[in-house]
Image (cartoon, rainbow, N blue to C red):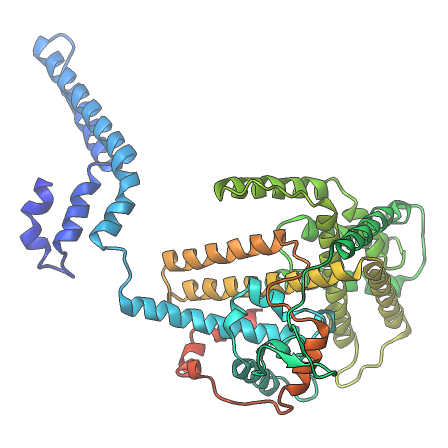
Length: 506
């Protein structure tokens, strides 16, 4: 305290200066770290070097330095144990970490830009057939898109169209989005002229029991289709197809790149059972291809999926889930193993099919001549084998309960969009536009939302519309693609220079 406030008149006037709040905090920091202990050790060693044990006075000096070293170490320990944990509350009390109103507006502006970025990614996902039946009620409950307007959606669609090459543009499927955003009122009239409640009611008990029965049947099918290990590990088979074999190996390498691409795009986690199974299946398929066997990574994936790591990961998730529930004082524990198994299978199939789709496109571009798309017979064999693997995956998806598949797909989209938002804040942090603390707070919020998505078991979400109401509202929506400018687009071009230039990495 003495040193800090004795030199305060000087420290407050040099450099960027300091105020009395900063001086209080510096003095409260106390003596800790290696400097004080190092000085005490140095003094103690010097005294030992200059004194001897034969002189009584020298022994007193040695004892004093030893006591001094113990006192310094004790003070440093106490400041670490007492002062360090209380530094955070003191900083907040002194107002040193409270953001200013201007900073709050800046962070809120970044948050709005993040919403527009996620909305753009959502529109891109709606161009894919696999997400055609994703209901917007699930997306708005679990992501940051709950407050978007019809004009913002149409503007995002128009941007997507402007940025896409005309020959590659695919119109997004908005049939499950527009009914929630079109300004047509809370109630619509049905064919008989009466008013109908637009919200989907809760699932009846009988219907829920039927869905549980279907889910149980899906689980039985999953456990039956564990793959044929003989075809994966058969080392005796030999086929003399050198050209086809080499191109199979190349295609498997492209598939590996496709899975890494899915990780970068936030579709699968960097760690976990799903990504482990996908890459493990490529190892099996690569070994089989080196022996001249046809492409069989779907069968290899089933073998990898039937692994002890799946129940181990599910158990770990339940342990963390229990920890969160106890922390939030939620004691109703629901161990739904069947839905967890169906969820993993659906996500596995979606990742597998999407990776094959991208790998086929890259394989076709790499092996065809410039400006042409004619493939050799060997290359067509590999493409046909890939088609066969995708067909088996699609068939496995059809064997699952349709309602569960729709729910998992909707949650899967939410998971992807939340990862996109996390990616956005990481880029802000990388470019120095937000502090580590600000980015950390947002990333923790996103992590909590991902956790809620993974544990969500709702069959009907809040404000979900029934099919009849969707059709009515969809018919009342404007047919033209609105291009109304957004109010929060001001300054977006300057903002793109710092953030959107890095989107090419994805």
